[in-house]
Image 1 (cartoon, rainbow, N blue to C red):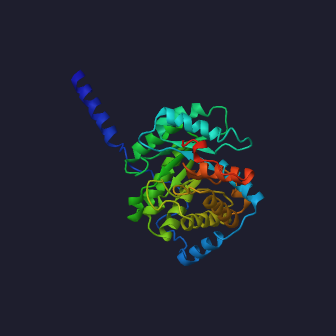
Image 2: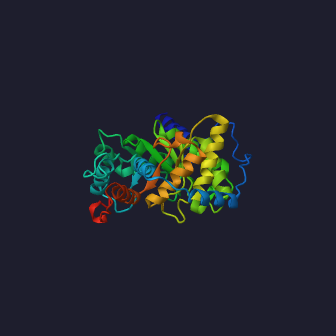
Image 3: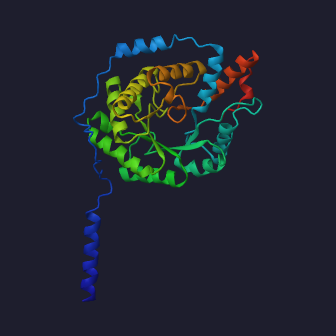
Amino acid sequence: MAAFLLSFSYLFLSLILLKKPMNKLKPFSSDFDPLRHESPSVDKVGVEERVARIQTRSIKNESKIQGLKLVLNMIDLTTLEGKDTPGKVKQMCYKAMHLLDAHPGLPATAAVCVYPSMVGIAKAAVKGSDVKIASVSTAFPSGQAPLNVKLDDTRFAVENGADEIDMVISRGKFLSGEYQFVFDEIAAIKEACGKARLKVILETGELVTLDNVRKASDIAIHAGADFIKTSTGKIQPAATMQVTYTMLMAIKDHYDRTGVMIGMKPAGGISTAKAALHYLVMVKETLGDAWLSNEWFRFGASSLANDVLMQIIKMETGVYQSSDYFSID
């Protein structure tokens, strides 16, 4: 009798495990149908003309200094390398809070972005400041992992103190037309984020066309993204003004329909103060002043901060400082 009960218990347990697949997406309940939704077609020539006009805007010196300080406060200072160490992360966190101590009045950056394994170290390093901790997730940068791995990745980062999660979409699924899969995966990660804000990385350099960028933007927004983000910084081309403008229009159309604001984060390849100011002009003219804060607009960058610092000091003192005066990380 005891042997029978033991065998029955094993059988019952096996049936439970078999009925609980580890990697099946739970459909997200929404009025939005990613398979039937038709995103507006993007006029590539029109986008290029619009961007070209924005790049010719002139900015007065006083406004330029204000703009550059705003850029600094919008940066997610980032290190995402296999050789990252606790020491490097701590140094970057210090820089985020003290961009240039010899030049008072400068803001801190918006956030520090690291791998999940470094979140706890970064969180402790910025304690007492307003600097947020962002963590990449979902098998960054490829996204080639089962859903349970991506969820564990996300939960680990949040449990260790991440304020924001930067996830990557499954580009292979998207390019295969499996839009429902992409939608449901984003929704599942959003749920795993809890109170952390979710930035959805489209990896636009792999999406090929602006029409695909617009479609992916719409899917991400409706699946629960708090921000949409261009790139991982590991694929070229990364952020471009044409791609960013297309994504800003998706945000604008969503806001016009619903009144709900979505943030934007161009990342990768933005390394000069001049380029950053062009992005701010585009945001202002496309979405308005409400988006001109780090709550709704970010730059994903590692080298941008130093160029912005050099330009601010040049404008205020008339002299360029050597790059040796600025820390690399």
